[in-house]
Image (cartoon, rainbow, N blue to C red):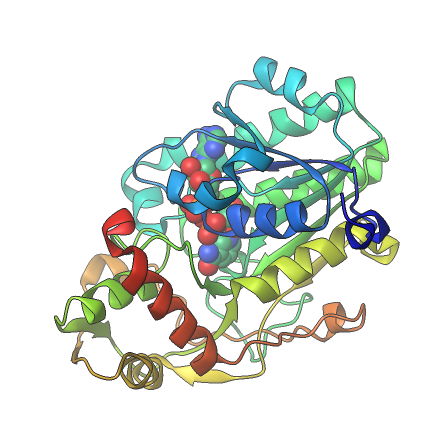
Length: 331
Ligand SMILES: NC(=O)c1ccc[n+]([C@@H]2O[C@H](COP(=O)([O-])OP(=O)(O)OC[C@H]3O[C@@H](n4cnc5c(N)ncnc54)[C@H](O)[C@@H]3O)[C@@H](O)[C@H]2O)c1
């Protein structure tokens, strides 16, 4: 191991990442391996979700992989026993799927979260946990930018279950002293995201269609959104796991660059050097769960020293370059 690796606070730390073969989990794993951590990934690789062996192909010999399902509470106890830090990222991410199959969303985003925390309480109460929550729990904003004091009023089943998952973490922190915090992520994009369909984010399928030279659909088009590049989210996760001021707290992530979806489409086409999109009316089933305009006030977390570094245009260019190279592994 190099001297540089030994100096990092992560050197030799035992880190468990649930959802570790997914988009954000794999980018986090790559960074942690570089920092000298001993990383174990838990993932079920359910085909409809974002887990993909390609995401960890470059670090496969430097991480331990446990192909298992976090709904198996007994199995999870054995895995979490010796870990120093848990990044709890496993989740069902599709809002639409949470409406057509609400019980699977409940099982993964709610019940399994409670059993993960129970496993920690039973066998490893000294662990430190960061939970990947979501801006979806706010629902349709009453005001912008949305800060952490905003009412939580989810518009879909996924938002309700993620909200419960988040609160279990804070509850176990407050009642049992298991040091946990939650980051409420906004739309995250970058290499490793799911582009097969819109299950993770509509931007994924836009990227695939743009690369295929096909038009992509923009529903509505005037909704405001903020986007974080995955490298900035990895910075945030690492900070949340190491700064004691984060313990027991929930924080928004976000970006100061706020764009309409139509502007995002233009930005993507510019970054791609070409492409087409069409603005369509919202399909009825989507409209009912849409949150309208959203962007975050992330000043609380900035107070701990985090700020996004990757601009949207730069991030989109890098993401497109990644998928141009590895399209067949993701499309
Ligand atoms: N990407 C975003 O824009 C975004 C926004 C808000 C919140 N989040 C949250 O961040 C976390 C990571 O999201 P992501 O974008 O990397 O999605 P992802 O789908 O790529 O990653 C989730 C991973 O969890 C795994 N998984 C799902 N159910 C599992 C189970 N029962 N057991 C074990 N593994 C399971 C999947 O296989 C996948 O690899 C999720 O909890 C998600 O809710 C993501």
